[in-house]
Amino acid sequence: MKFFINEPDQIVNEAINGLLTNPKLARLDSFPEIRVVIRKDWDKSKVAVISGGGSGHEPAHAGFVGKGMLTAAVCGDIFASPTVDAVLSAILAVTGPKGCLLIIKNYTGDRLNFGLAAEQARALGHEVRTVTVDDDIALGQDVKKRGLAGTLFVHKIAGELAEQGKSLTEIAEIARQVIDRTASIGLSLTECQHLGQETTSRLNDQEVELGLGIHGEPGIEVIAYAPADHLMALAIEKLEANLPDPNGRYAMIFNNMGSVSPIEMSLLVNSFRKTNLAAKVDYMVGPAALMSSINMSGFSVSVLQLNEEIEKALLAGAEPSAWQIQSFRQPAEISSPELPETIPYVASANVKVKQLIEETGALLVAIEKEINGLDAKVGDGDAGSTFALAGKRLLLVVDKLPLDDTGKLLLTIGRILSREAGGSSGVLLSILFTAAGNTYAKDHDLGKALLEGLQKVKDYGGAKVGDRTMIDALEPAFEALAKNKSVLTAAEQARKGTEYTKTITNTQFGRSSYLSEAVLKNIPDPGAEVIARVFEKIASLK
Image (tube, rainbow, N blue to C red):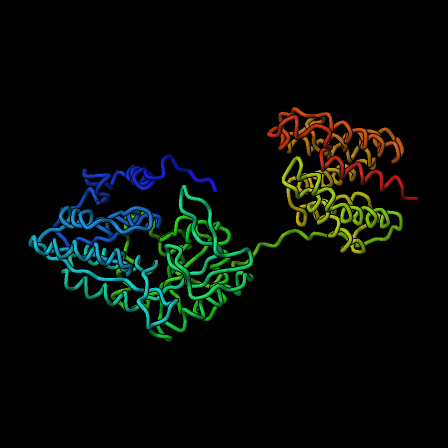
């Protein structure tokens, strides 16, 4: 597996240097032996709030250093607790007379190293309190629970209370309340892959892990891969069974464990929206990578039961850009403007025209896979689907069309394509038929009308003959019709133009301009191939 790295043993150091391009952050000059990120504006006049742990969870923890959240973050190696000296350095660097709160995730290394550093700092005369976050409900109540993304709720609320000038005792007490009111669970399609290490996996393509930790530790069970709604329902069922108060109101952190795409994260939020728990959630942080697990393809949901004081602190502004909170609501709708009728004209009958449309529509549907395969060689593989969609739509509405009025039929086909067909091909053909319909209304010459429509396509789209597009087939065919040549001649010209596209390997326009000669050689343009097939089908009709 490939990664963006230089030397594996320098990943954390280089990542911290990248983070510190933020002008509001600094590091202790004992770096890199001691990796501590601190606020540059800190004056020790308030309670300091410190957290940290192993790296690989970015933006946690250093990404949450800033006004309204953490005063400092201590960074260990990937998935490894920072040393006692690193934690002690952070305490000594930021702790003033009002003391300091250490926020620790419930992992043995973190508890030991942060705990010993706290003891050493107390021996030096500093007032230090610790809180340990154990929000993971996956393994049940009878085991030592792990710290997950719910830790960020503690960062935010403790940081805000410190900003307000609250005492260390007050902040520690509310932080413990936040921990008691927080529950989290994770679900992943894959484990994380360590940077620079050989890829391994304990899950196959049909397995998903429920309740795993942020270091990729095994969860409560391996379950069968299923649609997102089902997987979300399973995770939230576990979470609901462990809520602090089934009737409470909640804020939620919707966390990307590292490599779930943004569109999947939004889809997962929609899956969550369908659960019973969604009705109890007032606010959401995310969906975003907040406490990741390097590149794990998974998510976690953390919920915090609200009260007045917690809610107020949660909603207060915070400087770190990684923290963004918003209201959580069901999807809203605003009245859509009325669009022109897709088929504005009265239907009329014409047997030959109906046959032409039905045969053409059926052809576009039939060649979908073949054209997609052709397009996959020189494009994005969806040209056949675009034309097939247009064909299916025409087949559905053929009996509603003004088949006996050529001008109105052209305009109607233009409207259908503009609303129903996707991609550039769909909109360009919509322009063609619309402009042709407008021209035909003034001069009942179909060939000339189609040529005028094609000119509009060239004006808007920018392509011309020789640019390896469907224009290479359309223009010679339409010119033949404009000269009163037969449809058979037009089909022959369309095929000739399509065959010509096989020889065009250097263009200045469209997707072909990005491709090499080796890729394009002897492959016809997919759009031109469709046009040639359509003309050949029409020519074959009696």
